[in-house]
Length: 66
Image 1 (tube, helix red, strand yellow):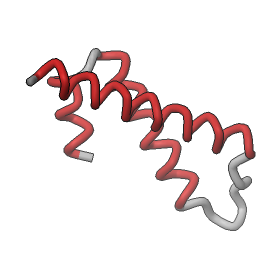
Image 2 (cartoon, rainbow, N blue to C red):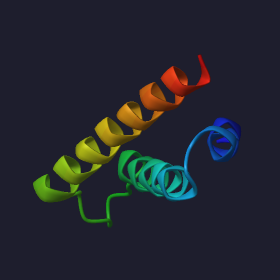
Image 3 (cartoon, rainbow, N blue to C red):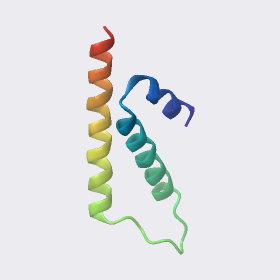
């Protein structure tokens, strides 16, 4: 979680906020309880696309820093 805080220094604010939101949603999904509903396929696919966008944003930030 502390690494997420450092994203603000390297990514646009909206990308860092989206990364934190996706991390929170994935964390909740991985720790769901018996009485919680499982994530839907659509939710899982959305999280995958968000993580892929984060990867792209991090690569772009790394290239700009060089």
